Amino acid sequence: MFRTRTDPSEQKFQKLRLQRFYLAQISYLITYVIIGLAWLAGQYSASALLAISHVTLALLTQLGFFVAIASGYNLRFKDPSFTNPQLVVATLLASYLLMFAGDIRGSLIMLYPLSLLFGVFHLKLGEFIRHAAFALACFTLVQIWDVSVNYSHKPPTVHLLEWFVLASFLSWLCVFGNYIRRLRERLQMRHNTLQLHQETLKGMMGQLQNLAATDGLTGLANRRHFLAEAERRMHLLPPGKALGIALIDLDHFKSINDSYGHAAGDEVLQRFAQLARENLREEDLVARFGGEEFIILLNKSDLSMLQQCVERIRDSFAKVSFDHLPPDSRQTFSAGLTMVKAGDCLEKRILQADQALYRAKELGRNRCETHESAHA
Image 1 (cartoon, rainbow, N blue to C red):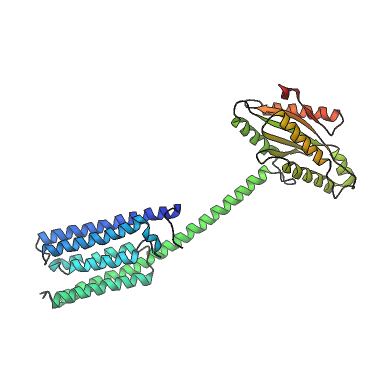
Image 2: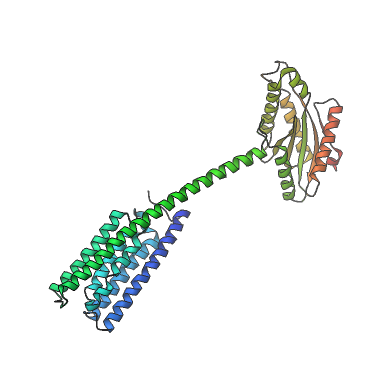
């Protein structure tokens, strides 16, 4: 499966490949300058046409690599950076230059190692050795051509010395390149390990935040999270809109714990939490406010909608049967309702809902009462 340029991570790598490509062009620019200066100084033992052909070949090959990378065509290949092809081209072009370099050839043999430096971070040791051997073989052919065709007057010892210098430097470069690559791999492993630790820490932080905002028994939001979320939603309320608040207290809950045990009480709390979630919209919020008290925040609501919602939950809860309670046992709750608008004091509105809840209990429980301020 081909990689695509639309992948954000691949776009980042493409930019990096182009940056490395531009950096490599500096070495080619140096080569162009050397060719021009050598020809002007009479040290380029060939015609101006051959000098121009060398520059033309370099420009055409580099243009081809640039178009392939810039267009994304390189992503079709196993090595999108074209490391091996670029090194082969650079080695051949350097050899082409050295064929006509005359007496300054010894000064220019460092063009081979300079080209190989661009493979330090990408090539394995075996690949690096093969490129180094290929460069040494090309230089050997250049020397043979110089002696047999160009009739060089250099003593054989000079040729051997140049060959030995290049062979020694390429051997050192192989060792150095392997060291750099292994160091890079170790750094990458440490980076991956650190990234893994960071992801683990993020997950743990998320769990801690979830625990800090959630009631462990019912899975609902807790009091602290509800207050913070309600304040946030109040600030976001557009003009003319309101939030509905219902403070709910399960009737005679203490007697359930006393008569049937805490397992029965826990079941009642959990079943109410489940029922409340099922009867609310996704954008609404229900939280355990403390003990057997729950609180509902109805998003972008009006009083009629709030009353209908709470009554629907109350009717449904009265029909629920419980495993830890007698079959004919039915549970109820009382609720106090109020409305809150942007700019209101949340604490004051909750107190009003609590007053309405108290009135519902005084009137016999299992009912909903609305604070008079909600009608304003």
